View 1 (spheres, rainbow, N blue to C red):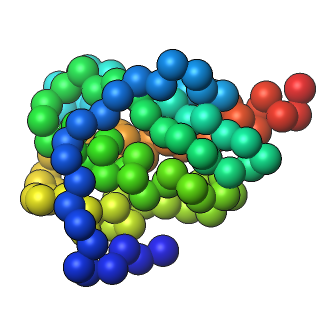
View 2 (view 1 turned 120 degrees about the horizontal axis):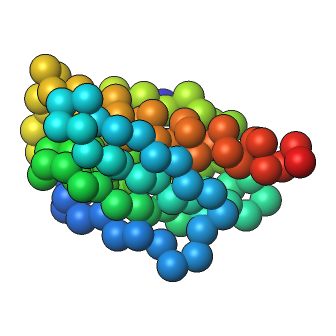
Length: 120
């Protein structure tokens, strides 16, 4: 799942969804603030994604790039997304912060919640 190198960079804007199927929350270890991923899923396809990011601008850029990457994906393919998949959409990558990992964690928690909801 590699993004093409000439992909348009995303604006670091993440908005919460009014209607969503599931959400996942993770806490950034660098600042202790929450990142929340919300997914609107229809027939196992992520038709919209959003959420909130309480931490730094870099975390918002990571989440915005992740949202752009997973929107339109099948939930099973989205489970395998890593930060390397959305970093080409970002204007900068700061490896030492690890904020991208917390955004991915929020995505995986949301997808786990979707699986648990479907199994109930």
